[in-house]
Length: 612
Image (cartoon, rainbow, N blue to C red):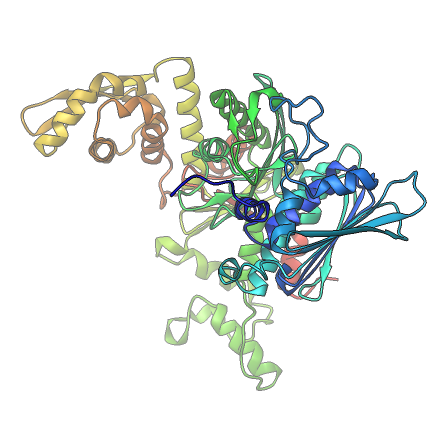
């Protein structure tokens, strides 16, 4: 078959296949044009998920007759003054959007510059242009797109339901609103509930806009980013490690004001949170990167959704450092969503109404640790409001023998300890949870999870300054293991010495432990060595020991922390609280679980129906 020149309308329809993927793609291109035109207010109206109507109205600079006619031609743009693709400072620059849209839909453009008395209206019906004709209108531009893909049924049948397409438009506009806090965005239509995001300005504009779009909950449970490294400026908000989602849909990335999908940024976020979150949980992040336009190529994707950094390593390093510094500065802070989850788990007792006396007796019997014949005689009658009610209850609690029900009350403390953020220890329950009180409410602390994070951070600090200090065993501990595990540990022994763990082969099926990390104290060394051996088998290569430094010290920290089931003295509990306050990232353990829950006084009052 000979080579031939394709007709213009077919060229435009082929180009539309790259630029116009779905109604959301049209909204993205047209709103980006409005932003580039200097609009301060953009109104988007849709019908039938955008398939029936998309109307974008702005108050930007507008276009005169010459610009209006050129706007629907292919490869015509006002955004490349010097024809330089290495210095792109606008959102649109390819000059294909309007021509492509006009080839697969009914397109009308009405525009009026400020210095002109009336506007003009131009129509494009599936690639055929008519007009322009005069039109009375305010300054700015109105673009209407109707019956998308009506002349391309093969494309139309691949579109999703009106609801799904409408949701995609909402997502696109949210990202554009997050990238441009100084612009007022309105989204409405017959197929949706209206959304309104007023313009914000000033020092806290970005945080205010993120609160508008994502929600106040995110703004309250995030740390602010602000860092510059290697010519890369990183800003935005990063959610606390305990404020996560089940998927990555709440992670937003912006480069030079453009919403993008980029593997470098995704990998940087994953690496920055590697120490703090579950593997199947995703932090909520709104990340803004500013970089010299010459250092990034935004022309690698027809829809400009992807880009390529000239120095990806520098960008990755800058993002990881910015998030790490912000999370470190947050210290022991944990998200408020943890407390809300706890409050949601509380339920008021339900019982049948049989008169006041019967109700009181039913509640008392449920709350009492004894029932029937097991109740001591000292309890007297069953009335919980009896003068003798208070004293026997304490006696009953002291007499319980099950470890999971022990309560150790703290001594009286002065008001000075109440001023600490994590307060002072009042009791220990179930031999694992510390009950503390500060000036604002009640705190529940998981002693094992908290101490695990403290040991882990100390390991990291010691490794940063050199090998971890070790302590010699008076008598080497000999551990019997399968021969293949012994071989792996023997080969990895020189690397493990960096962590304060000194091992030697002791026969074919045994390992002798001569020195252990001093930080671990009298920990479960047998379990630790077996755990490390399992890790070596999983990682397959001995070279991975250095690469898996965090995993190694995480295993050591887990075995060296205060175990669940250990009873602590009051001074030990308070010492743990003070260490948590002084240690970064102590609001979550190394597995991503929260180490403490704080219930404000008003929350506790609400549980008892006392809120006002």
